[in-house]
Each structure stands twice: as structure tokens, then as C-alpha cells.
Image (tube, rainbow, N blue to C red; front, side, top):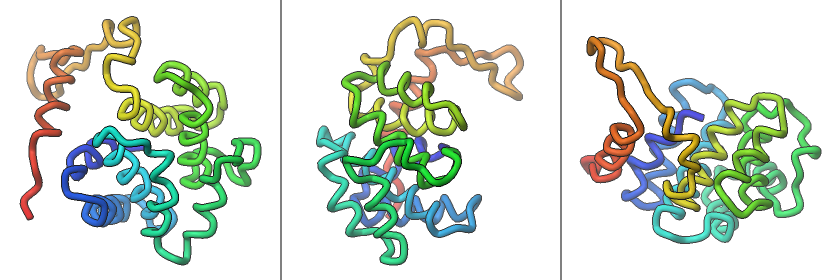
Length: 184
């Protein structure tokens, strides 16, 4: 759920580098290789989306880049016929979280309906909604986010007195992040 910034940051580096970066970043907080691979999948789908391509169509090729020990299970939970009712774990776990986000993207046609579908699943809604929002946002674009959701955004900036970041400030930060290339 914390992969949005790194996914955007490393997107310009190509599939292998963005997936490798995702694994390293996920390893900072998760000891399970399944989480590393799930984050790598998410990074790659974001990269593909930012190129204007269909992340769902990219899933089969993305799965070939997953560690063999995890490939079968990821293939099963990311299959087109998978449904959140098929989950064998709580949806805050990496497998059903990413699978639920992809299910929400696959079964809806807008940012708002994808995010609503993810939230309506219940369980670990903040995690599933964060992953869904990242995917749906890259697919549908910022203009697809309802203004009634962004207008009230305000984020006090710790350590900066009374400075508050509003929607425009957050968009500017995201734009500058996307423009920065990591050193190779």
C-alpha cells in the first residue's frame, strides 16, 4: 500500500529495474518474498499504465518476471476469473490485497467505481483501497478522481509551522516526482 511513490519514481527505468526496486523496497518492511513479488507486480502494472498501456493485458508478461517459487500462486489469484470470495486469507495479506485491487479494476469502468468496489469488500479497506486507487488512478488519470473527493484535501506539513498542503500542492509534488529520474 506504500508503493505508489516508488512505483511512479522508478517507472521510467523499465520493467526489470522497477521490479527490482520494488523488491528491495518491500524487503524493508516485509520478510516474505511473496510481498516482494506482489510489490514488483504492482510497480510493473503502474509503469505500464503510465505508458498509456493496459495493465490487465500486461499481467501475463509481468507474471513471467516473478520468482518461480511464487509464480503459480500469483497466476491463480490474478487470473481473470478470480473473485475476492475465493481468497483464503484476510484481504490485508499481499495475495488477496493485490488480487482484490486488480479485480476491482477489471470489473469496473471508472476510478470512482473501482475504489468503491474495493472499499465495499470490507476487511482491510485502507490497504486494498490504496492499492486500487494507485492502479485505477494510473489507468483513468487524475481528472477521473471526483472533485468532491479532492476539494477538501488538506495535509498539515509537520515541522513547517502552519503550512498546509492542498490538492494543488500534492499534484505539484506528484508531478515533480514523476519528472525526476533515479541515477543509474
